[in-house]
Image 1 (cartoon, one colour):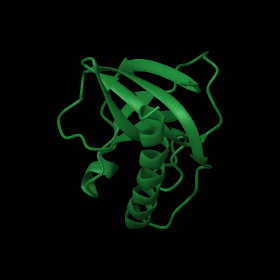
Image 2 (spheres, rainbow, N blue to C red; image 1 turned 180 degrees about the vertical axis):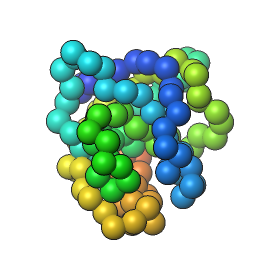
Image 3 (cartoon, one colour; image 1 turned 135 degrees about the horizontal axis):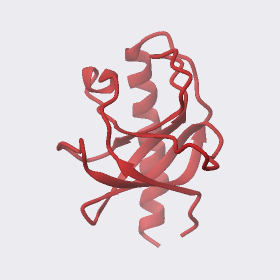
Image 4 (cartoon, rainbow, N blue to C red; image 1 turned 60 degrees about the horizontal axis):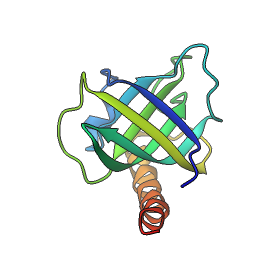
Length: 130
């Protein structure tokens, strides 16, 4: 398996926007002083407590929901429910899906993330079946 980029850290509280539309994310700050991949959306694996979960990760700014100039790493986990706040996680980016897009509403973000989740599941399922 080819690894694109890996980041570890403790899950921090974000703005809660994903949670309001039923798509909560695990948030990590982009590490200062560490090279990061191009901003955009990636198919990813998130590891917590020794288990791996498929995810969709946005690296960079969040132009649809915030004007904050500080980049973040936000991962929406597929097939997971639970509380990750304060947990140590590792996110491994596997495949670039698309560049960051500015959308009109959180509902538009949700629709796009659902499409991204389908694409990520296809990429990651084929990878885990090898």
